[in-house]
Length: 391
Ligand SMILES: Cc1cc2nc3c(=O)[nH]c(=O)nc-3n(C[C@H](O)[C@H](O)[C@H](O)COP(=O)(O)OP(=O)(O)OC[C@H]3O[C@@H](n4cnc5c(N)ncnc54)[C@H](O)[C@@H]3O)c2cc1C
Image (cartoon, rainbow, N blue to C red; front, side):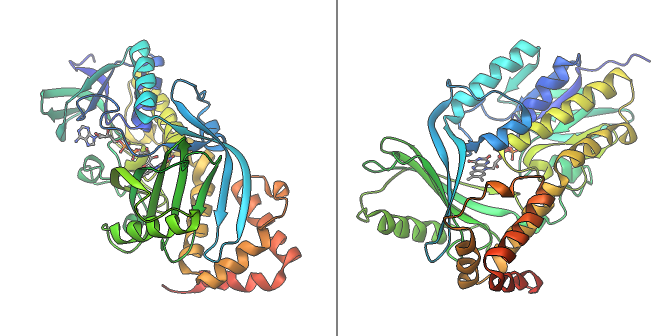
């Protein structure tokens, strides 16, 4: 039976995942409205600004000069005692506003009705339809996709437990900084250890005199500014800058669901994608959004938006990503529980060695890594007992 709706699909949030969900659903014939409370797509920009080819490859999206501001040769993983593992893998520092502007064009070309400056206030299911109350009136649709980020209220209101470890969000402070030559190196730097418990401190060179510095901390509350201030001081010393040489241009805070592990993604007529579903990262979020949008369009075309039908989305997503997110969580838990000395011991096994043999699926990589340590420094395997620690 034909029912009166404003759209087949309403997507809440122009996050990387929301953009992909809206675009791909529209490309497959669905009538799509995309809402975002920001006045303009990409303004103010999200702080996420760096990705590597191996992440973006998952989405199959091309990487374009229109938004790339600096090309990186790879990343350095650096232990508390200064052991360095070099990983050669092409990376990109992007202008996030230009990135969003590029995708706005893609959305327009796909026929998505984009409505910036529209805040969603509530989503209520009424029979087979949803009533979406916004700052600009009420919309009615058959299917809602929540892509409204890490602090999504929409999914929680639908009763979904979107992640397995919701308390394990990494809270971050990231800043754009200026200092003479700070943007010139061609390697991203990823520091692990107790200075940033639970994950990392970062340095991403943006070219010339610009870069970003960030800390991502788990289990120390949302307020992690002290960790950030200490990181800037430490970084200045490491790189030979005076304390006042590094100017903070803009400072952002936010959460990253990297270790939370995605869980429930669908209900009747309802789907969650991106950070709202614990799917961290620009490239991985985009791929998740693509799958979500394609399943949404298929469900609309089949006139069946039941939970049973929409389960195809988590099924396809799990096939591509589940083991990676689990391995990622185990790795981050290991780093969180190890002492700085243990991290040094493990990192020293990989420092200066050719790591190309460690490629493969996440599970294969995990196994090969264990064998690699056993072959080169068996005593370092002892440090892995940290995983058994309760805290
Ligand atoms: C400081 C920081 C730095 C990061 N850096 C990187 C990085 O360099 N590379 C990387 O791959 N990942 C990075 N991440 C991870 C990042 O969180 C994700 O990759 C991604 O960019 C964020 O996507 P998201 O799905 O969480 O949604 P977001 O990008 O947060 O988008 C959610 C959107 O929903 C809108 N919205 C929310 N509520 C409503 C509502 N009620 N009504 C209407 N609209 C609404 C918001 O305005 C927003 O546009 C970083 C995270 C943080 C916190």
